[in-house]
Length: 206
Image 1 (cartoon, helix red, strand yellow):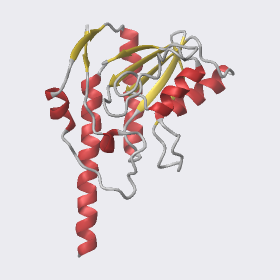
Image 2 (cartoon, rainbow, N blue to C red):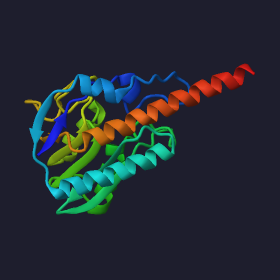
Image 3 (cartoon, rainbow, N blue to C red):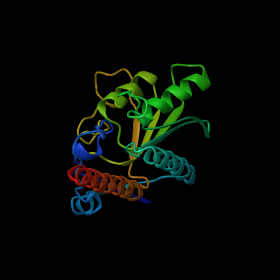
Image 4 (cartoon, rainbow, N blue to C red):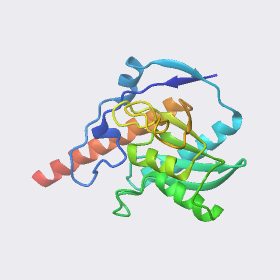
C-alpha cells in the first residue's frame, strides 16, 4: 500500500505557469511544510503504476535540466506508453505547454485519435484547471498523480473538475504514488532557483 500524501503547495512556487524569467521565487521548504500539514489516506498501486510514474519522474528531470518547473507526464494505453511530455512553457514561449498538454498531444498523434478513452495519464503533480479540462475533453479514463496541490490542483484538492456532475465524462483519480520523491524534486528546484536569483542580484550590484 502506498501512502497518499496531501501536500499544501504555495501556488507562487509550484504552479506550472510560474514565471521564472523575472519574478521573484521563494523557497518555502516544501518538504517540511508538506509533512507537517499532511493528511494520510491509502491507495493501492501496481508495479506497472510505479514503472510509469518513474518514467514521468525521468521526464520531470528533463524539464529541470531546462530550468522548467520539474513536472513530467506519460500516457499509457494497453500497457504501453503512447505519449510523453514535460513542462516546456518557458523554452517554447507557450503558456499551454504543461507536461500533461504535451503528453496528450503526443498520444493523440500516435493513436490517430482525439479521444483517449482507454488511456491512463501519469503525472508528477496534480493537474491545474487547464489540464483538468483537457483530460475531460480527451476522455482520459484514469489519472494517477504524485503530489497534490491544495492551492491550484483541479483533481480534487482546490477544485474538482474531473468529476463534476455537469460533465458528460468522469475521470477515475488516484493520487499519492511516489509523492515524497516528487515533492522533494520540486523543493530542490525552487531552492536552486532562489539561490540563482540571489546570485544574479548580487552580480548586478557589483
